[in-house]
Every structure is written in structure tokens, then in C-alpha cells.
Length: 170
Image (cartoon, rainbow, N blue to C red; front, side, top):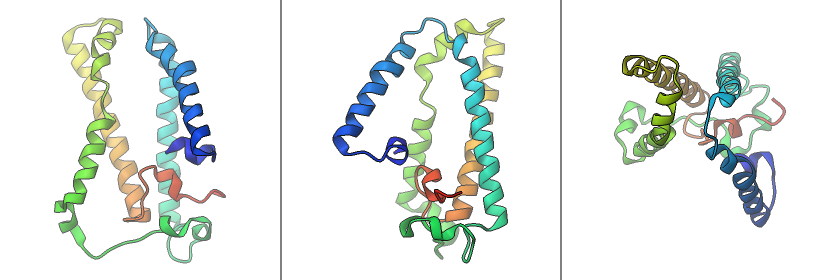
């Protein structure tokens, strides 16, 4: 997970860090009555995801992680590119259902829908549908693109947290 990648600590320390983050950061965010103050951070997050997609695309196109690539030596053996021969039939494997589970949990913000509607300027249903539809559409396109580039670069060795596949010197 992200914390293990960023803070290599023992399991008991990891639990303390997660409890601290939950108590000191996430809980106060959940208690907020108005989400407007988070708008700049949301924009920053979207820009970060776009930058990540761009960086991943550059690394895919320049071949840094392909056989003989300049950055391949900095990647753990289990995370190095691995491509099989199953082809498109592997989509019909029961293992592909893991992706369906990941996609279904990636968009679990339904409990915030009333709050989003109430805080929307000119909050008509038509405007809400447009905002939600375009937001989800953009998210699906961006995440789909990142998934495709990550798989095209690392194949079946692609980690659930794709940034783990990249060299720490990159």
C-alpha cells in the first residue's frame, strides 16, 4: 500500500501511522459541513493524476523499462515487465474479475451525493447530472488511460499501485 511504499516501517508502527492519519486528518474532514474549502486540493489532485499519466506515457514511449532500458535495473525482479502469450482470451479468465472489484470500489462516493448536490451552484437536477456525468467520464478516461499505459509498460507484473513498478531513481 501507499504508506508501506512511502514509509518503510514495521507493522505495528504502520498501524499507529494509519490510526493517527485517520484520527487527525480524515475524521475532521468527514465532519466538515462545507466542502468548498477542499476545491483547490481537488484541483491539485487532478493535476497530479494528469502529471502521473504524462510521466508514465513518456516512460512507456522512451522504453526506459523495456528489455535493456536505462531504468530497468532499478526495478525489483517481481515488478519487472512480464508479458504472457494468452492474448485477449485472458480477459475472460476469473482472475480478470479482480479488476471489476477494483473499479467498483474506485467510485464509492455515493454517500456524498446529497452534499455535492446542495453545494453545487445553480443546483438543478440537469446541472447536477451534467457535472456528475462529466466528472465520472473524465475520471474513467484518465484512470483507463493510466491502467492501459501501466499494463503496456509492465504487463502482468503491473502492481495494484503502479508507481511501485517504477525505479526509485526515476
